Amino acid sequence: MTLRHSPIAQVSRRSWRGWACGMLLGLTCAAAAAQTGELEDLPDFGDSAGAVISPEQEVQLGLATMRQIRRYAPIITDEEVEDYIQKLGKELGDQSHYYGDFHFFVIQSDVVNAFAVPGGYIGMHSGLILGSKSESEVASVLAHEISHLTQRHGARMIEAAKNMSIPTMAAFIGAIALAAVAPQVGLGAIAGVAAAQQQYQIDFTRANEKEADRIGIELLSKSGFRTLSMADFFERLQLANRYSDPRMIPEFLRTHPVTVNRIAEARERAERLPSKVVREDSYDFLLIWQKLNVMSMSDPAQARNYYEAVLRDRNYTNEAVVRYGYVLALIEGSEFVRARRELAGLLRDNPNLTAFRMAQARIEERAGNHLLALDLYRRLHELDPKSRAAAYSYAALLNHTRNGAAAKELLRGFGSAEQREPRFDKLLAEAEKLVGETANSHYDLAEYYRGLGEIELSAEQLRLGQVVPGLTHYQRLRLDARLEELERELNRLDQDRAKRREREERRRQG
Image (cartoon, rainbow, N blue to C red; front, top):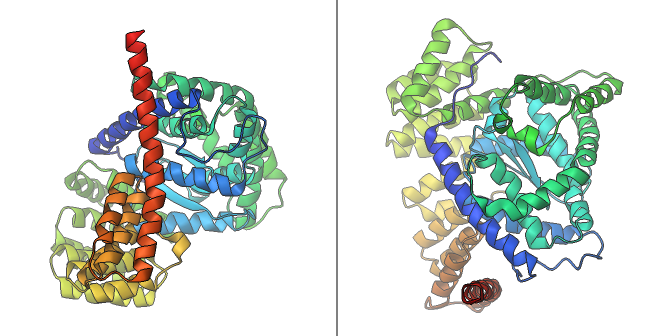
């Protein structure tokens, strides 16, 4: 792909910096409390002599970490991006024989990085996708992170770091993501976590990274991707930054240390595998690249001017893909007449392509033509019933037009309970409120806040649900059970805060 990579919007950098400060404070409290063994938010995984943590405990750690990431990080909630990264990740994950489920997500950031969280969660920065030359390179990074999870490197790290408690481990996981967010933030609060991170990198990173390379390359081969892409990606990053200020090195190279020998070994492993027909970049990848590229622009006018220049200079390998990016830029700038005209040509050649039909529906929704947009979303959902983008967009517009019954029916029949995320809970809560199911609406809104790590807001929604007139026995039991669980968590948080205040008071008096 010959398109130029455009800079991320400044607003994105500011949001990252805000998340960094918030996470730094959280990490400081976690690290300080961990040193005295006073944090109880996360499950007790045993003392330093214990065995490797169980898969169930990994899931608990992953859920707790993800709530914090959702709370502070700019996770991309565009369902087309989510659908794509889940689909690509699943293709690789299915070849790994992992004991649990994988959950993939993309973070809005020009930083080139990716990371894995115990429990099956893998995050990739949009800057890494935009900086990749092929889908195989993106797949190589996902395969690498999947291998960290299948080999339970997080659990092995916890077992090996005998003096580090689980809260410190959670802080460490956050610190890796934090370093990618804003390495220039000069706050001393991360010092305690940084020491543990440094020791871990000395003792474990090299061995774990090589193991993840080896298994990741095998996953690439089994999934039909180009096995040399991993070495190519590492080498390109390293060569492009070999004379850079160390502070400007891509974060992927900081959290995944790369050496000449490691690159050579990865290339040798890839070349030893039997040669196969390598799959080309999928059309989905090319289109998602354009969507992320538009998101990275500082404003709609910049995006429009960029695509007009690319089309004028014929600086592309696939005109239809670039015109799709141009349509997205026009939609962002509310230039709906031009967007319709550009999209009409794309739809003539590909009338059933989900991405093009989603763009068509969004034009009409943004233009205020809700009846037409509803019809377009309905037909698209019927054409592609597994599309989260089609289902959620359709449900959201049904709610907006006060057709909660149809939205609820749509959502209840979509996907599996294990794969639903906070946005699903929010849409369902809105639909239930519209049809008068107030108690259920409070419960699902509580689930939404809980998924975002907003435990107090979640508990407040449950308390509101408890006083709704006419509760059924089942509704009361469900509300009571979830509130009891959340109150135990809030009590532990209050106890930790009280103990920290006592320690601070003793320090001041001493």
